[in-house]
Image 1 (tube, helix red, strand yellow):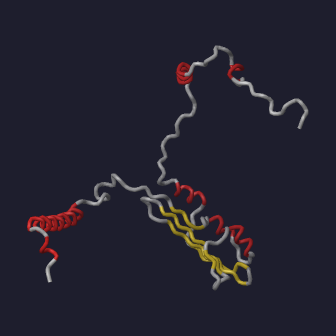
Image 2: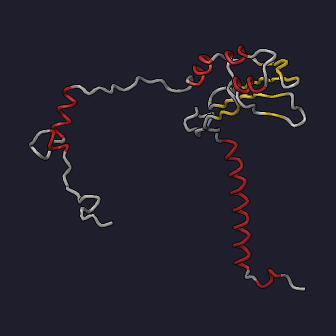
Length: 194
């Protein structure tokens, strides 16, 4: 039986061996290079991908928890807390309210409130430490840049510069500017035929 390489010229065989050796050398160099180049986070975070804020679940505040009282009906609890995130077919007397907020560059926030019912009446509830409404809103604004709001009032100099850049086409008064430049035919014809 003849080898399939017997029909290949010796120069071509040598070229293929060189190409295979070069490919192996290149792959070895690439793997070593990835270990020697620092990660972008080590470079100082100059280039980082944008990650969106992920808000999941029900936001429950301290004020809402303070409104809960044992003996309330399910509908009253739902009116205060909203629809629960988790309800179980196997535990119909338990509602779980879970909240998570993941933001880039911040530690994830996670809170849980569990409400227990007996005969469709609130028996008890277990809750993590909930923030007040003001505390929660201020935590949302922490990572946002709070620069000075731009001044939305134009100075007389800015108004004059704008008027000089955009002169009116007609030298008339403001009434001429308010009139339409075209006339249009009436929407209905006046001949009375329908």
